[in-house]
Length: 315
Image (tube, rainbow, N blue to C red):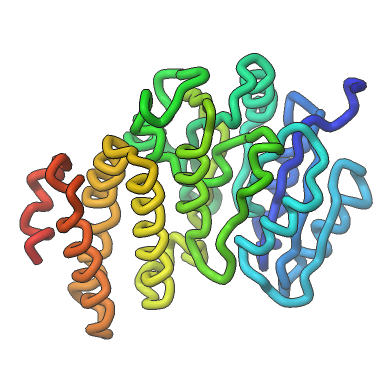
């Protein structure tokens, strides 16, 4: 393999992200390790996303563009990209996020040295501020999953790794994805896949370096900013249930407990706040049913939710 030959493929899906795609593509061009290729998937955009992707491919042969005339969704777009990967490693980057310049070099070097099935790194939220976006700090649950560095570890040895549930924080051996695909037609498609990765891996690596700036859009159009919509809520709760189910079926009790603690502290409180003022009573019903399910799990006895949310759980 020559120095110029790609060693990792990044699958970069996007729909109507013309305002953000240039920064994502620039973050790839700025990588200190240039041995990458990127499959840019325009998922039925109605803005200039497709044109931006095409211009990148015309200027740099490391970019390849695929166009969907209508949107199939993020999971389906990623699955299409997976069929085109022919490099040793693969990863994901959402078209409205950015990589730090040293990200791929650090991730590739780690896998080269360990031979693990995948490596997961830290990430930070990038929030709107002063007309631009400013990266925040590593959140506690991300740090718990990725720090300190652990090489060749397993879920049994590091149960808190399961808190890192996003697809774009990891680079994997391509062969590891032979039997893995994303759910299609739903939001939050990466949560179940992430838990399958942890439970199926022979070994994986975690490193505390921050690799991705995860953009929370100023216009509120990120899927993570749309939980007040009932269909989005249902997909969200389905993803949470699915991730817990994967961990439970694998017998990863400590990881289930860690996920329950995080879900109670982060997800449930937010959803209850929305439910209190939501105009559709079905919203509160969905949230209440989910809380009841969580509290009925045997692993809930091991959970230690923050005392400040005890009243919320009794809601």
